[in-house]
Image (cartoon, rainbow, N blue to C red; front, side, top):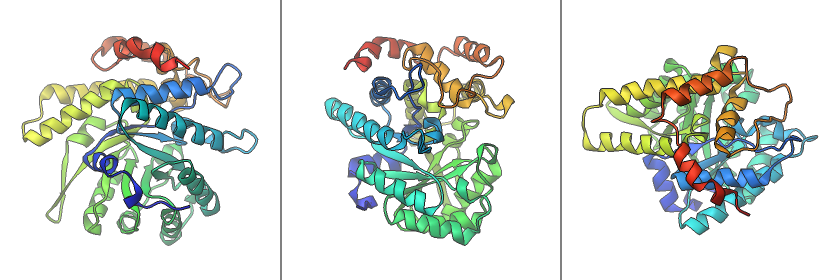
Amino acid sequence: MKKCIADIDQNVLAAFRKGVVIPAQPLALDENRKFAPRYQRALCRYYIDAGVGGIAVGVHSTQFAIRDPQIGLFEPVMRQTSGFIDEWCELSGRKILKVGGICGKTPQALAEAELEVAAGYDAGLLSMAAFKEGSVEEMLEHCRQVAQIIPVIGFYLQPSVGGRILPLDFWREFARIDNVIGIKMAPFNRYCTLDVVRAVAESGRDITLYTGNDDNIVPDLLTEYEFNGKKLRICGGLLGHWCCWTRKAVELLDEIHGIIANGGDVPAELLARGVKVTDSNAAFFDPSHGFAGCIPGIHEVLHRQGLLPGIWCLDPEEVLSPGQADEITRVHDAYSELHDDAFVSANLAKWLED
């Protein structure tokens, strides 16, 4: 079974091209570290009602360990979450882009792509983390093979959490691969981000750019880039940061799109709010401890709102870093304009219903 860009619902694809919020969905676990479908479903309902244009599953926030054969969660999580999304979309009368994470060397990646097509995903977010020593051509051939099965969104992952520096030549040729629809840039590095934008400009292809730079979300979305007379923008975000306080993320992106469409000046307040977003991300993602508390951090935010039953990860050693809970409390209390507690509180019972 194969899928191409033309198979994606055209309204969903048009929204993706314009730019939407795509949260990287966490994995809901119970106190025994077993999959908790009721809360996984509640998260899907939360995101859809918040107004997202897509959900990414099986990515870093969903915990790569679900792929461990002894844990055996990759297929059930991917299939069930896809069903939860479809169910709520049908009830709410809207459709969104379903993105599945794809990892590993080529045999593993092809198997994951085939599973995701069968489970109803629209596109695959393709990690190159398994190719830390691979050549540019080896990586490109890997991408070409995956793109023969499913539409691909490229993923520039920061080296500090398993990625590698990828040269401009890689991204230029990657953008020319058939069935590539977008690139998520998450190197947390302005130079590397510029390489991707320039590469897409030079490729001559219509590739949609998304920020994954959780440390620079608002500036990424506000900036117009120009290379060789071609102007480009980063249209939306596929972000772990946007898996919590999601309703406010949707409002933020809508506001930015409105400013760009009207050709108005960027308000100083919006730039200041961007700093608050980055400060919040520092609390959630724990860069002061090498991002060790990244996943427990977003779990903590969602748990405080009632959207997760706890902050458990598959690895018992993966816990909040010292002082991280206090930092989350600090940014929550300091930046009331960024959290969506009232929205969640008003809808939580509905999202948790069987």
